Length: 151
Image (cartoon, rainbow, N blue to C red; front, side, top):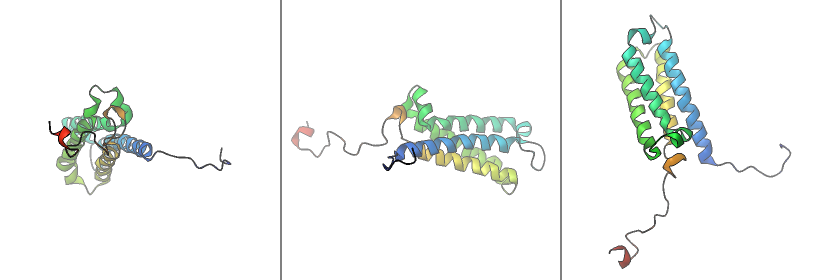
């Protein structure tokens, strides 16, 4: 109710995760739109289908960083690493395929895709899901606790 005087408490980690998921999904859509757009000739899919398939698979791998997807993956603790590999693959596609035609409308859309994907992976890395918290601020069993920690 908007008339409540009580302020809502929002979890910033949940908001970052939702924003990251939205950015990652937008990146996949931008990538596919950029590869199917007929800018200055034919679409990229008919011209270079293997590169387009490679970029699509890598972008889908990068979706592993989304906390909701992480819960259903086996070995969810490695989801951030899988997402980083997917992001690196999209970066290779951008470097070798998009950069030479970066001054076109298609190049702009295909540049926005890895930028959104990188932001999405960064926002969701180590948040929620099966991988647990991003870090443990007070690790138990520190080596500086005295003689009991030595032996």
